[in-house]
Amino acid sequence: MNIGDLVTLSARGRKLEVCWKWRYPSKAPVGLVLRIDEPRFNWDKNMKYVVKWVGDGPSGRERYHAPHWHRYDLKFVAKAKK
Image (cartoon, rainbow, N blue to C red; front, side, top):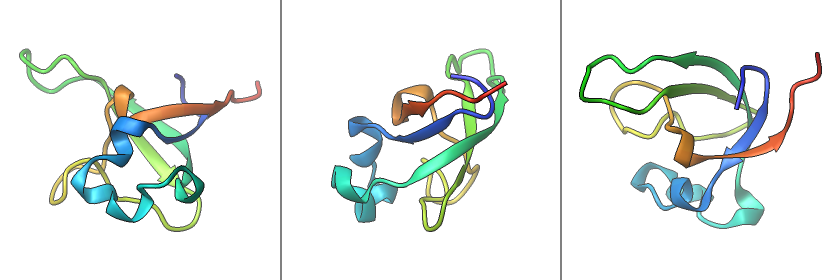
């Protein structure tokens, strides 16, 4: 997954508490990957993906803080054209 790719919530991502509105695949939002950040701490192994949703979408995987997602929360829809 790269910057500019279109993504949606995976089955695991839809099960998160903050994604209760988008539980069903027909309601899953589509978004664009804006940025990929490295893990902040050495114990954290997950890259952080910042997604801009088209229309209404969840702010992030955590309710209060950073608007980021992990790779397993997202599902690839379409590749960015170069």
